[in-house]
Amino acid sequence: MLGKKKKVEAETEDADTVAPETEGEVEGEEGAPRKGKKKLVFIVAGAVAALIAVGVVLMTVMGGGGHDMPTAEEQQEEAVAAAPVYYELPEFLVNLSSSGSRVSFLKMSVTLELRDKAAVATVEANKPRILDTFNTYLRELRPTDVQGSAGIYRLRDELMSRINATVEEGLVKDILFSEIIVQ
Image (cartoon, rainbow, N blue to C red; front, side, top):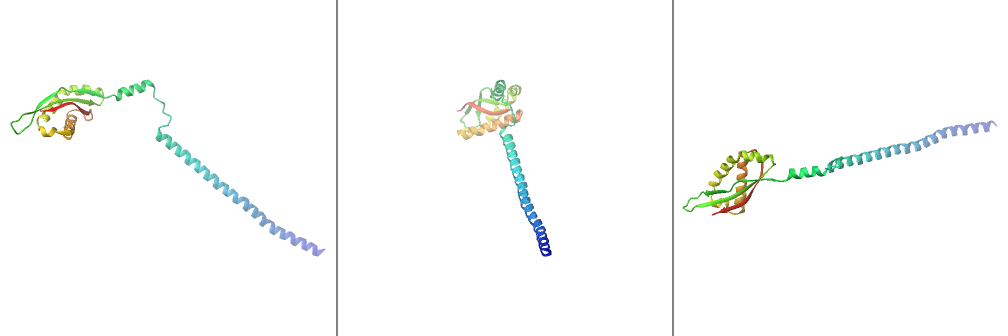
């Protein structure tokens, strides 16, 4: 019996020794999936946060930030505000500069495209100064200066720079020629 008791105690000790290892392995196996689950939760949470951030950026860029659609009255007011405003200057008839005995004339009708309706009052108030600036410049031109489309573009640029120097910068958006005759 003593032999059996020692044998049983040895088996019990072996079981005790083996049991903690087995329990540790079981805990380790359970612990490993728990760590994997934590990593998976962090990865999923990061992906969701990234998708939300991308959605917010797209909504901001595309203008979907909760803006209401404009009413019909607002659209009509915007259309009126965006409608071009034109101001027609009187016809210009000037002698062109020439070195020979031949006299050349320039006849020109100009329409100014203005920034807004309030600009009309400014142009009318400065009309004598604008006409003087244009006439002075046009009298210095030679017939070759206004030949072809390149000459007309140069003429437009020069007149724009002179009118911007005469009145407020940006008041006149463009100069439109209704008629240009060089004779």
